[in-house]
Image (cartoon, rainbow, N blue to C red):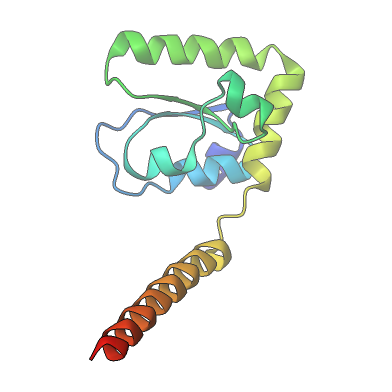
Length: 132
């Protein structure tokens, strides 16, 4: 299954519900550009190739919010058009393949939230002690 996904140009994942989803992440890693319904983990991992995301270098695929065949078709047409724009297509592939999906950044984010919560709690308890 991984070799098939790695050999594709596009990966279509129009799931109506998807709590996490791994296949779109495999596709990104293999240089296969995903087209996904923007739900759950698909929304967290696939960044649509609209102008702002292309400019800031985060675009790595195509996504759509409204679960409708016509909208899906439009996204597929966008993806096919992008395929024939080689600089754009190569940018999408590179953005997807170089994204760090490890726990390193997530762990750092959790640590930061924990530290802020702990700091807030310590400040709150100190102000209660000072007024007592």
